Length: 296
Image (cartoon, rainbow, N blue to C red; front, side, top):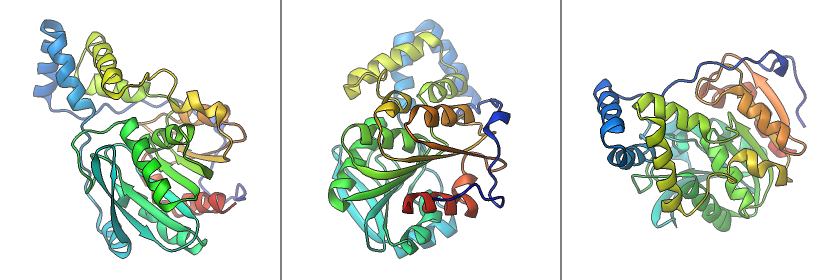
């Protein structure tokens, strides 16, 4: 198990402060229109907002990510009624690499070579509505269904390495029956509130519209959000967990990862600095710590 080596960018959790969250980017005309609709036609605003909220943007694939993806074995599978695309590298017990909301499999490729060198097969998905996979909308339920399907095809699953909302989807999948011996979460949320707040502020909808959106979404997905968040399922988890989280993360506050580690039996928290929400995935020291933990 990796030690708190002085070369790693890890710092004491006691120094944490909650940074200002970065709102979801939206053009001014949309914010103005949604503010007006929230006041004049909240029902209509909620329907439009739900579509916006559950429609992820497709992020650009970096050249170095594309090169690693090209070395992988491309596969397709059916999950939650759509086609999901993924890549696999190496042989051995499977480690699932799980991107976050608005991400893609390429964002997890910095872990691939180290996972393979450790004797594992690395499997990365473009989750539903992301990357090369089908669909325009996605959700926690879509994420978990795709992970469950991948686990059935490539299992047994030795480990899961997940980022941000992908950690939420992974925790929900594990709580729903996906078995993994170990897990590493980069910048995980404790719940969904920070995502809802960033959307509400960025898009300009009222709290009433946000409440309607969430009620409609629960009916659509056939779930209750109360009870399925990472912090809700954490106390039931048995797999060892490592949480890596930048204390100045402006998308998922550091305190959320720290609280998740507190609730997850036996979890380890490793705060980092200067890496933000995405660069933490490309930091060589964090990659080494993550793969070392997964290797056990």
